[in-house]
Image (tube, rainbow, N blue to C red; front, side, top):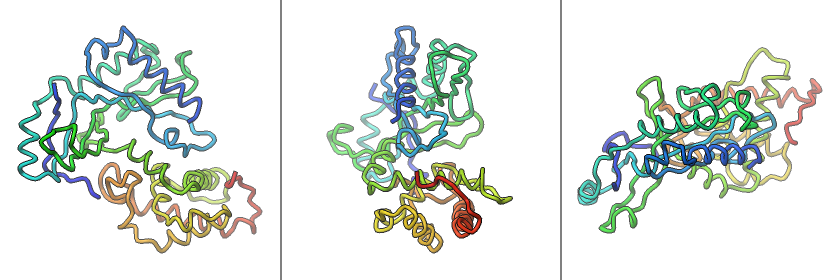
Length: 313
């Protein structure tokens, strides 16, 4: 379902893989060290993975590990689904926070520089980047997204937050621009786990196909589809196709299904927003069509041109 644009409340408060696991643990230790400004601030936060490593859809050659550092003691809320009575009750129970995402970002940046060295840590537009080449403490490059909690309230009973139905995500404002980014990586991960067991393998097959097309197939075209879009696209494929044991048959049938699919019904893996649209977390149907067209072209010419890709391994 789309994320509503109205009834947003500002900050409120009540007062895989070995490389990816190492990156997460080392980043958490940096944030929680005794010298960390985060410990001095005494605020609640959590650190976890997001992206292809977290979702186990990464492929050989995947590089950066994406880590979320999220403050949970202050949040931004969407009250669109609450009744007037519930919204009034919510506003009576919560005050504006005096330590929010902007303060948290500054403290995360300082904590990472203390741990990994100033030269290794660079603020980017959306993430704080840690360069493994400039520190001996990491084996992979790490992108840390310092963000705030985002809550979509479905209900707000008399018991307050403890009894409320809440979908929790994350949000942040890029360093350049005023277009807030909102997504739900934990819900994304859980929904992916509930898919057919072939789902994640199929995502990796399509990512490998994109890589092969761009780097080895004899063509002047390039597939620009990003990994997140591919993962969401495959999420919308019927299980009756995903469960095919033959990888080649599955690949072919998915292309056939997507060639005739109604994209307007496609959701992101979190099912919190439509996959295609104009927001900064949505995808372009033109890029999806391009992906499908180019992969079909490669599939049809595969044996005639004796291409020897390792899509299915």
